[in-house]
Length: 271
Image (cartoon, rainbow, N blue to C red; front, side, top):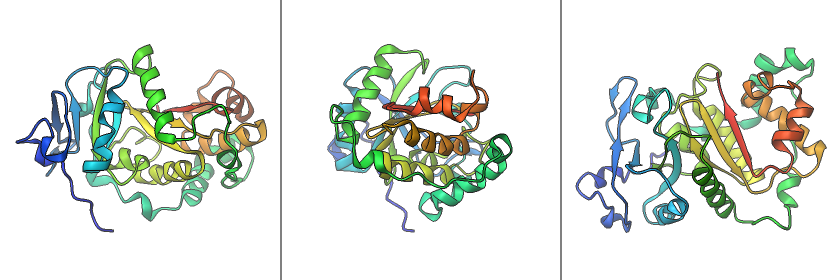
């Protein structure tokens, strides 16, 4: 797999990004990992808190520079990404993994004993083929709306900042920065990114926010029937067991009804 060129080093002498066709606000480059400075920047991070419209303003970075936007939490008990123990050296490539195989492995380890069921396999993408006619069709437009709501309402992230990450696709962003939020569940985040790629293809998800151990994705074509939602909830169980096991009603059906069915965003948290 050929490595994409990383345009972030160009921002060292050109902090506004003019040479990349950008108009960036004040920000900084982050290269801090669990083993010290990485050999190149992992992300660009805005200095100011994100506000509605900021995501849209950074949209040209995708086309002109191959940089994808994501909101990161620069506050909280663990601090910003400089303190997250990013581990890019521990990441494989998401495209080297099969989503069904990854989830089957995780299901066997974490969910089979709780549910008494064998891995049911990936759900059909019927929801993506027949989206809600009242919802926007463009996954990037849905992501933009979720981000604007997120930064306006607050609560989920203590100090939301816009960031730019060099990545092939939105699903790859966590692995691209070496994010280790799920390390107690899966040490190679690229395996989970393979699942995110599958959700990107089937449900139009975008990775919109990352905290120390939190992940938020927008969903352009969520399941619209309870049966579909339960099938997707099984995938969520393997992907992030804490979502279900540490909820008030630790059942797949209850989770499907409250957290998956028709929901335009999915939130994951690992203990």
